[in-house]
Length: 422
Image 1 (cartoon, rainbow, N blue to C red):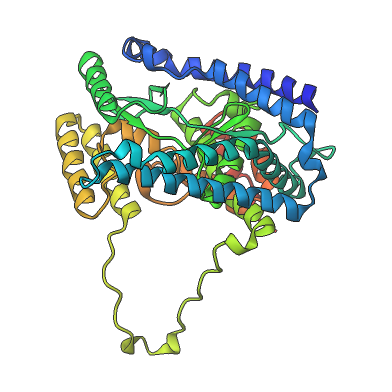
Image 2 (image 1 turned 60 degrees about the vertical axis):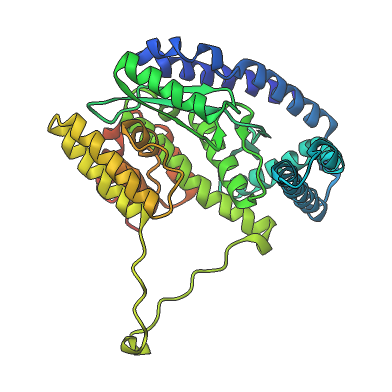
């Protein structure tokens, strides 16, 4: 098992590294400003692969029954929660103006935090192995295995993730660069980097957070949100699966192929991740959606729901207007409009929108697993969703998508006679 995992790691690392280099070619001059702060994928991959190979050779989780495996994962989540609470307590101690010696006052809390982080470190390999096996079992049940094996094997590692500097031309929304930066850089450095790049190259730039990266093993952010973890593990496994096939190999060839790739991974990440959650952690799965009220329920007696600000709908409308302004060569008007709209979102409570620009739409617009949102009127995401709806199974959908190397392939399949009919 350890040797097989090593071979997969080497193969996928070469492919994924090549893809990362190609991604930077259109705006290589941007890297004049980022080289000192770029994430070291090679070192991370070697270290993570060593952990995985050691984990496979020990095979500790093979002796755990499903109930024991569940408990390992749930204990790991409890430890993460404890670490987060202790970290918050530390911050509160240092913020308390009544404390004259916060360093001394924080010693017990800091000691507990150190012990908790050490417990997490010891438990992490087992928790990852259990989650990998739980995902692999569902993938096999869905017909995505080969001779009983999931290829590539499901392999991920909890890690602090790099942020990504996204670069788009100002005159059109298009991702021309995606450069990963060392995690933990102060926000002011992100802002300064964006400004330097924009002034020097006359582009739109934005540093964005990411939740997972399709290296091998894949990188996943540590969190207590198990549903999100499972969906991210599947999402990144889909990227690894596609990286050995035309859709993944051509990820950077056109914006349409990137959207096809990301939307496929997002759709299946949610779909399969929720299946794993319901199978292994049913108590954590969301309840079924409530049925819609019947017409006979006298709607006149029910007070109308107050109007709610719909983030996706408003972002969708914003993207459409921005595209129209850019199409008319009104670049400065488009940028002024985006800032005005960002302030509207801020007033509605969406304070995470530090900047709304072409780079924002270039990055988030490729994740079109739901209607609306940052994709605007781009038909690619809707076509991928239509293919999933018309596919007979999860495996049929993924295998069809995997062998496409153009948007024309997707429209051709959707338009083929008899496709999608019983």
